[in-house]
Amino acid sequence: MTSNTKSIRLWPLYIVVSLTVLAFGLVWSMDAGQRADKVALTVLILIITVFLSIVWLLCLSRLAWRVKSLSFGVILLSIVAFATLFRFYGFSGDLVPIFEWRWRGEPESYAALAEAQTPQAAELQTDFPQFLGPDRNAIITSIKLNTDWENNPPELVWKQPIGAGWSSFAVVGNSAITQEQEGEWEKVVCYDFLTGKEKWTHRDKARYYTSLGQLGPRATPTIDGDRVYTVGGTGILNCLDFETGKQIWSTNIFEENGAKAPPWGVSISPLVYDELVIVSAGGAVAYDKETGDIAWTGHRHRSGYSSPVLMTLAGTEQVVLFNNGLVTSHEPTTGELLWKQPWPAVECAAQPTPLPGDKLLVSTAYGVGAKLFQISTGNPSQEFNVKLLWESIRFKAKFTTIIYYEGYLYGLDDGIFACINPSDGTRQWKRGRYGHGQTLLISDVLLVLTEYGEIVLLEPNPEAHKELARFPALDGQTWNNPTLVGNYLLVRNSREAACYRLPTE
Image 1 (cartoon, rainbow, N blue to C red):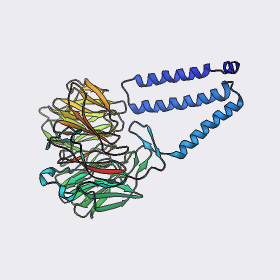
Image 2: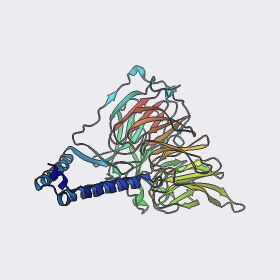
Image 3: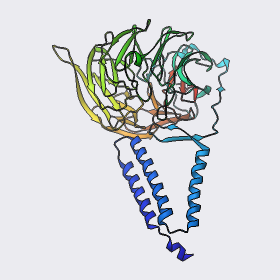
Image 4: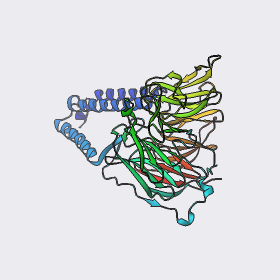
């Protein structure tokens, strides 16, 4: 027994294990860069380690052939068992492969709100008619939450399955409208806000899917009066009747403008400005909201994933658009290019954040980070000037929106929550691994819907990361933005949707 043990050649395996540990340490000790690259390198290291371990087992170990054959058979059997028990679902925001049980059932429906509990109008005092809320900035100031969720937890109103997609809800009155996928049909669906019952559905024969981007539409509808405007995953722009879902006009914005759609699906939520619907299709494009005719075409450039946003900078109202490799600003009624700012050609999904003093924060992940620009006009020409104030690798917004509150910036830095001092870009703190989720500021509390489907409340405190409450809201990967109407929180992911009543002070 002793002689056989000594005859096993272990030193090559020790070298493989030591190099693996060293490689892991080097990859994850780097603070900058993007987590997706670290994850990809980690997977590559694991594959190489397994391969070298098998080479050691079969060629260098000096084990008996019967032991080698049995060990190799166990490895193959484990691979077959894994492939039999699990199926590949997709990738997380950090490109971590997601597997799920093959027999995983579909979500069930729950209705927990009795008719006697129907809320009064005062509880539904605000609408949420578009992407990121009334002002398209992920800030709600109409209510103040009670953060003692241990004694006053959120109450489930309803919960039910929903079609695939990363769209969020737009809500006006008692109608909650979102987009989802059913087979080969891309749908715009209107639900009763307080019961989850379907009110109407519009269908288009369209389907977007990739293993990275996954399935379904990803833009959020915009409600304007008696009209609903939606952009599907392949670029179909619809104008629908708010009450019935009947199509009034429709076009494919990329085909009509001779532009190329972004490779991971169209996530550009339409912006309504006066009589115009503004989108991005090879640069900013405005449509007449009544007829669907093109009203103006802005500076041409490849579209990104960010949505157009209206803001006032240097005393001028303007539409700012984060394209792939370029930030542009347009006069809203004519599309005239007011200014442009080059940006590294990476995937851009986060919304630009305006700051006091005519400053604009722009951020992406993929190893780029954030930059703060000063927007000004010169005399006498009144031409716009864009000046870089600082840049930092320490604030990399991937899918999320960065929020400004009482002199500081808060948001997810490549999946980990962080606070940044906007005066110089220095980091106050970074803590709280919530994945690539989404954030709302509700008066004086930050609400984070994590990538894992949890609701987390944070105190926006520049001195320290302070988690106030946590609640499991959804099951599974969640990239969709939350919607808040009064104290009713509407959340969804690619499998299920739910409505919760949040406690208020």
